[in-house]
Image (cartoon, rainbow, N blue to C red):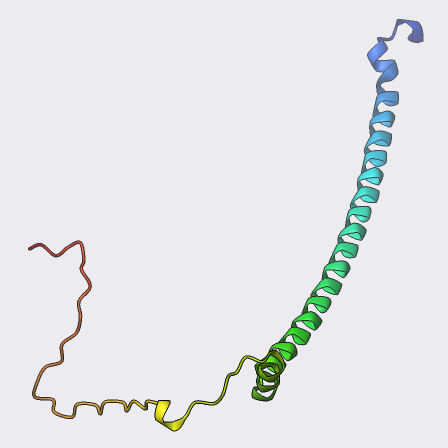
Length: 125
């Protein structure tokens, strides 16, 4: 005898519909995730490009500042600023210059060298 469709359980009738809706949701969710991920990649690419532009600007600024510092430290520039500001600075007279000679290294190795010792926690008196 043929089975009557009215007597079948509701779960059996809605099974294929549930499977189809599950697959549709899975594919739709994957598509939404893919689009979101692509937009995130695009935003990160824009951030990287802007940061690289900032780095270029900082390097250019550093180069300008280095040349400015070198200019300001040059003896000609310093002399000119001293004259413009009327500071009254003049070069040192030879009598005002004290030259220190470096002590010659000791060549006699018969005497032991003495070194300073740092205090440590493991030394006991």
